[in-house]
Image 1 (cartoon, one colour):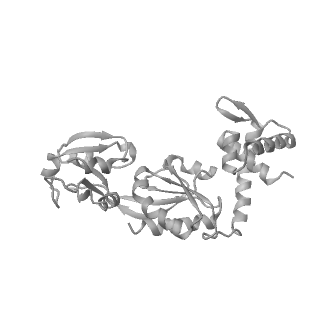
Image 2 (cartoon, rainbow, N blue to C red):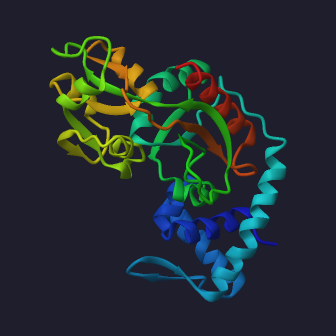
Image 3 (cartoon, rainbow, N blue to C red):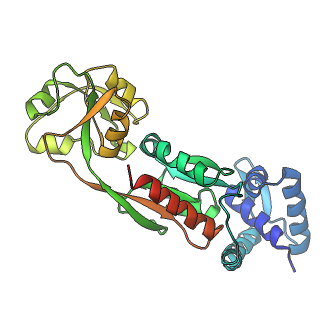
Length: 296
């Protein structure tokens, strides 16, 4: 009978493509993984992987074993998880959470203090969100949870509605020409910062075009990082989600006003996957995340 830890090694090498990646995921040394791979090769009578320029490439038999072992290990771990207790007060677990850049800027300041008050020994690693990859990331153990804008995709992971969002206009708190109300006339007179739509958010182009309007775009940026300071130190306007606008405005350097034209709403969701990892711990993380983010 094969040691279950050897099965985990084969799966980790197959999914990470390297001995070092497998060692990092399994929290063991590289020599330990190499030793386990040698034992597997001896037991199964096959090289299982060959070293290439791109990494550890599985043999045909190695891929067959992975396809058998992966679902079997999931079932075994799911059975174990039902009996595994998670105590936030004593845990030193590292949770991996996927967020967009806006999620980092808007959510972390609310989430991290609550996490550490509830579980003082844990640590958190943030992964840059890519919804197209999260099924694979959950399967490989790269992430435990994801929070992000809902878009229709083929995502198989489970999700839970958090809140509905809309867009607002962000500007300097001391803007010389705009006080507490933003009209279409004043909006069009100002210069604008536009964030690339590949960052995942609407930027007003379609609504303005539908009304036969155009604005003067002074700056285009690829992401939202640094946007708050850019707006605070200039007279430029930008479009952001309303919770981001409120979060930025709380520092006193910028303010957020309603847009003078209609924009779309969108959902923000928590994503996770059942029967992988410590289910009790993931349920706790979902609860804390929901509690922290639904109040902002």
